[in-house]
Length: 276
Image 1: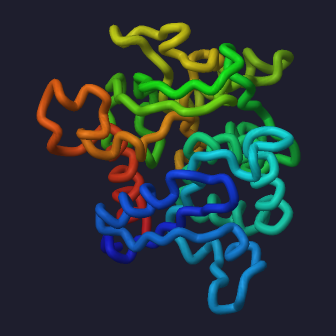
Image 2: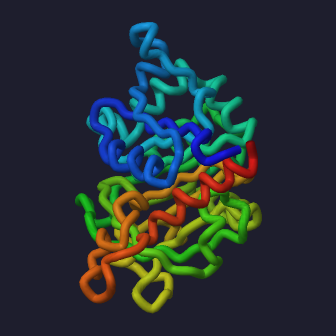
Image 3: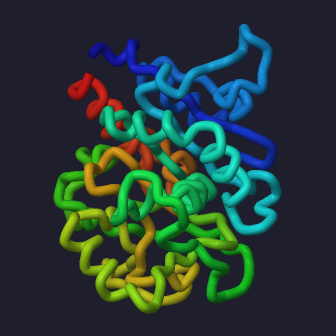
């Protein structure tokens, strides 16, 4: 498939953010990307505006505070998607299409039961949680992420294992947790299945506590994929470091060139080009 034929849908609803930048960055890389409101996918829109999930090769759920993050972060958006799009979501993933959840989008994927995905593609109840940060406040800071995946994740094929990337975090509920009674088993499954994609590290590349881990996430987990590698949830924002000049230390070197977050966009586009 040619890059121009790759169709990307960046889903928005009340409270989401960074959808415009994310859409534009896919366009910068040559993809056919558009912003699509959730109501366009659920059929609650005029006929000429309706979209089908299967119209897209990549669907991105951006950051923000969808529906005000009432109930729990991402819970309302996930409920709306599951009630109307469950079968389409399952087929989308089964076909190997790419589902990309950033920050609030990661929270939505967890609430949907699509991540960590140990018990299946779309579980009836969430298998994990993204809880309130240990600091009990909104954390907005540059974070360093060590790439842990051995090659199964479609979104990080252009990132070397062990490579450390910088991406900004901006969340209040980013603490990844597993059920206490199944924590050891599930964590082992995630490691064995190569589902842990990024972990928070300090400026020496070592797994660190606060503020390097901004939320207290279990095992310093910052990003997970499903077993097949075509569903990714990442808490920090790759789109906010797409260009080098978006990095907080850009004045120390040339501002020209790609930023660390761009690697994820490039990786998933190349995956789709090969897959379809």
